[in-house]
Structures are given as C-alpha cells and as structure tokens.
Length: 347
Image 1 (cartoon, rainbow, N blue to C red):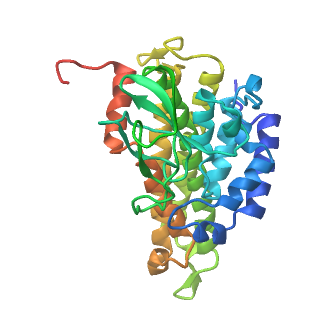
Image 2 (cartoon, rainbow, N blue to C red):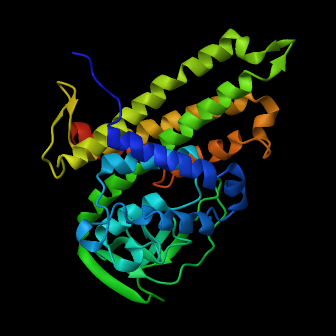
C-alpha cells in the first residue's frame, strides 16, 4: 500500500494563507532591517491582526486551540521567510499560560529552554522581547512577567536571545505546575523549531537552484556541471525526511501519544511516542538545514559570504536556531537515551 505524505486540506489552506501573508509582509528587506535584534514589531502587529498569536491557546481562553500539525505548517512558512518574529515561542508559552494579553498578542511570551541557575534563565529564545517567560525555577514550572530588555548578546543568527530573571525585578510570578510539565512544552518547541528549520532548508534549496541556473562560469551555466547537479539533488531527501519526522511528531502529539502512551520498539523500528519523535525531528531538521545552506552558500562562491546575498541570512539562522538548546551532540545523546534507554554504567 502506498503511503500518502500529502498535507490535509486544512494544512494546505493554512500554509497558503501564511505563505501569501509572509510574501507580502516579510521581505528580505524586513529581515535585514530587524537586525541585529531580530524582531520586527510591525510584523508582530500584523500577525496579531490576523489572530495568529491566538492559534495555540485553549479555546476556552479565546484561542484557536490549533493542533500541532497545523502549527507545524505555519512554522515551516516562518522558516522559509526567516521571519523575525517569536511566534513559535509565543505559541508554546501560551499553551501553558493563556492569559488574555498573551492570547491577543498585546504582550509576547516565550519559553526558557533551560532551568534557572541562581534564579536566572540563560539565553532565553525571544528573551530580549518577551514580556512573559515560562520556565523551570526551583523545581516548579512558573510564568514570570517583567519588562523585556529589548537587547541581548550579539549572536551569529541575530536572534533576540537574552538572560532573564525568574525572581528579581519581576512584576508577577505564577506557579503553573511541577517542573516535569516543562518537558512536554519543550518537545512542542522542538517540533515547531524543526519545522522552521525545514522551511530554511527548503528555501535555501530554492535559492541554490535559481542561482546555478543564472550564474555562468567558463561560458556555461554552473547548473550544467554534474557535481553541482548531484549536490543539489541530494538535498530533497534529507529535507523531506525532516519534514516527515516533524509531521509524525505532531501527529503523535495530537493523537495523545505522550507520557509513555506511544510505542518505542527499536527492534521493529516502530516509534510512535511523542518525545523521541520530537527529538528525532529536531536533530534531522538541524542537519538538513545546515547541509542545505552550507552547500548552496558555497555554490555562490565568494558571493555567498557577502551580506548582499540572501543565502547568508539562511546560513546563519540554520545554525543559530539549531543551537538554542546548546551543543547538538547533547541532543543526539538524549535521543539515544529515549530510544534505547540510558546506560547507567556508562553514564
């Protein structure tokens, strides 16, 4: 029986809406103008006007309660545009803390990917612009409101990272539950970030194909060189693989295969549990985006390293977004533990 990997009608419709919106409202000029902070307030307001900020929040709180499978196609569109807006982090945080100001997008929320150390969350994604941070502090999952600093350390991807306090200088602190609840939120972030990285990889491939079909060398289009053809032909497999993993993880989440209710059988090669699928999607998407952007940048020759060429926007973000969790090797080790179990003797 043939497998159908096509998007559903709802997914196609949502993807079309956001791709058209971003084509009109998030040009590469918008991306460049948002640097170095990596946040475009005008774009955020336009997303608010189409209720995008409410998509993930519970219906009972005025949100759209969109399934992760729907959010994933929007995240991919955001990645294709390298949109300077923290919509992914906002969605994840508002599922845990859906207060009115966040559902409406009047205020921005984000998730701290690491527990606090001495009351400080380090390098929080969107931490430079978020009013609320959801994270683990003192063995509790908390939401903390404070004034966003609107600045952070310089970084390769021009992402609005910043350290944020979980205790000092805050306006409000709400306990949401035990620290263990953070992992499910972080897995949602992994899936949506994976989808955004797929979008980066897909657009990089498009940039590469366009470039090699117009650039001439030795009197010929460089796209006619077999080595370049092979290099580009290798990319769709890894990109599609990452996309399928992200959608399978989203499916597992929406079907309720969380908290050990799915299957992890490596002898049979069957995985339906959300957590390992989320990690698999994140790792594969990070690799696909890194390889695609690296290859296409080098096919540009020296031009690829110039700020004038769009591929460098994608090259930098492919690496920066994938490293928000820290060393990618640690994520691979964590995935191995999820799939095969932790070897305490080695640990």
